Image (tube, rainbow, N blue to C red; front, side, top):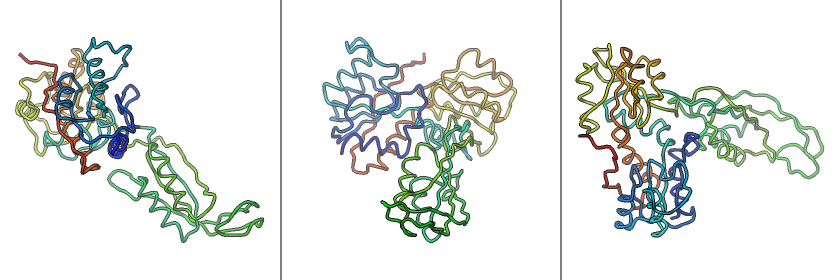
Length: 364
């Protein structure tokens, strides 16, 4: 298989269109057409990880954090990133990053973190906006079921935990076929009226081309009439952070101990809080302190994330138990998630998980 097959497999589960504007997910090193046979999954691409990939004869490294984030101005081997790029090119190893698009999908990094912490009823903390469209088309009544099913297969019609969502209303369409046409119904040059069904459904913008193509391929008309409308609705299947509930309320100290043991860290930083019991928990793997306002608005008693700044603890004091559990610690499960996503789509692809500990933070 080729590298582009891997990209398509990942995109089907964690669409690259969901990455943040500042991000650099996708192919970092390599050609989309190069052949790949064995991959190595990691959280960070360090020189040690690249050496592991060479040693294990891997031809692609799949990382959560981008190797090239702010861009490189030279390849002199003066920084770890430059060294990795040089070694990757030297050994013909491709590098792929799956970063904030893996964070932002509903069943992504934050969902897995929440599951590991024992949370139930998990839902996106801050859903994305301006990500949905409404598609409207018109077709003969007898063909409406076929067209509707094709759009659903392409990914349209999802609202919350419901799929195959649409609305239909019957009406009368009119058209006159031109001289160079081959009309499905009616005659060239004659005004024709046809009993049609108006079909409405919803879709994320990144599936627009796929859904429209499926609609056209299944539609009997030579020229398909359709409309696309941008929507301001929240898309609750994607966004930042996660919100969930513990099966039973826990005392603050017991909750902190559970987080510490689950994430395998030696210490936690946390704010002072007025809550004695924790039931509702917000979380975001990595640098998620920007979600503190959303966590407060949600009514959560605790917010678990990493990279919290000094003054952000003041903002949380007495309102929510803000827990800084570490960037690496809260994102460590991304390796497992990436492995499962790729293997789900590419069953026969040899895939290994890196054994290198890339956490740059050491606790004394």
